[in-house]
Length: 143
Image (tube, rainbow, N blue to C red):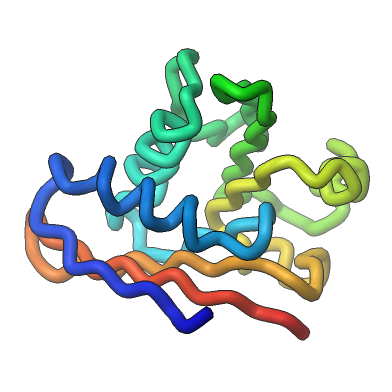
């Protein structure tokens, strides 16, 4: 499957984009890249809503990981590695166990764990185009 690209004019368009992303995913490991304020957490909230997550979705800035459950029982683990000092901290919270589960892993700031990313993953890149507009691209990587 080729990359999916979206020009998102407003946050109101996110549910449709999130649904398209979920249907196009070829991996449950999803990396989110974008500058601070680009909307990574906002998109993750929309993806979780599409999966039927009822809990409030927030960035796990201090806890490093939040867990959610979708309407069909699927588990979603939302990682925010922004404050990570060293990759060993990811091992300390059981990173390897999360990878083996096969659940959705939504990962903000994946560059902080560059050496721990599996060979097969999806990458969502968010580019700030204006105050409201975002360019969102979904690509897949098989190393």
